[in-house]
Image (cartoon, rainbow, N blue to C red; front, side, top):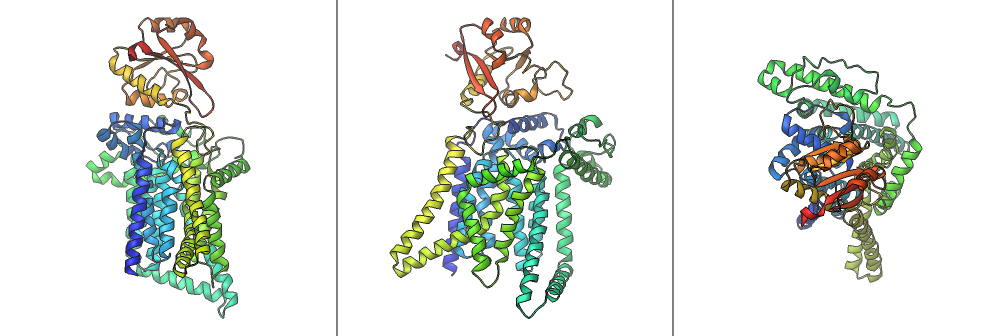
Length: 579
């Protein structure tokens, strides 16, 4: 048994290494998504100013804190900005080892395989979003909770609560995981009460037994519970605490301007992390302000109604279900088989499998309620993570049948099992390759969200940054009303003259490549700008006529979609300087 367990651990570690290789390979090749571009820009801004405060529209500040150091070490690149999610996603298969006491060895390896090769987990591990971080750390926390209960060891609570706190630092929907945990626990308790009818016990006696067990556990591990709760809040406060200097009240609450909330906290009097550390007497103020204002801003952005129109729940549910089925077909079929198999084939349902299946099903039903955007493929991350456990149990059964068939010399059964396993792995591998490597920006890719630029934009971005290195003066001119902002931008996002959000993700590449950009609102301004021979001019395709009339033959016009199937920009690049 020890030899087999060692082989299991070795197999899991090998799958984690494979997962890391898949996530790091060509990590910087896909052009930045709209969300990646704006957050990466704000990370550079934090590096320059030292000012950081919670902006719920871009979720938690964890990536700011980590990528600030990574940018200093590796440079501000697409590879560096995606490195943290890639590492978390690559190491995720190791969590399977924490379930060895619950799962058979084949299922442990199967779980690591599913976590390593699932196309959704792979794609969004190569994307600077908090979903894989929040989901992966919540999955780790769940494993720690299971071990804390099964081994009656309160020390695992520290790992669980720390993982949850760091996960919340990446994205606040870790709260949804906690609610899913409570809901699945209630359903498991319902299992026990229901099955009491088929034994000598009664539902009341079973409920009383569990309440007494819980009470003894709370008393026995009161110190660990209190310490882990303190660790949780200390970690959350450290991550979310404002840094540098707090902006004006209006700026601090700007993300909540669609809500009647006015803000209950005195921003001007609140301490920042540096001030509280310099004067520990102000730490209670920091804790109160950080937790209170974060909860207020979160509720304002994500809980209070933002529009008069109702959430198109059915549309969002259909989209999430379709994307899950299309990208994780094998995993879904295995999860259903694993759940039904343990539900009906054994003496009683398997707690871990039932819990995980209910958790995944609740995610499918629940996330369309809380999302504010359709076609968000990253939500599938939170569905496939819990469903990977019942899927691993089913796949483990197949592997065990194959092993037994080989031992018995049953070549027919061995061949059938082999065909099924190969189909499962090939299905995942083919979809993973197509979505993450072959077509990572294509509108035909079910995981590509609308705000992802499509086409071959990367060479043009590289040419712009190369030309900027050799140019003196303005490197890029943004022409036309679509790209020009006639209103002063109080937040001073560079280029300050631009309609910044329309231009994304270009501002990220301008900042990362030290590209200077200016704007030309109309033909007269464009004439003035062209007199300085800028290496690049950019215009929205519907507004390109004025540029075409004035541009020199040296410039090559390159058209790129700045969204998955829409918003074409024309990049006029001075080819003579590239030669």
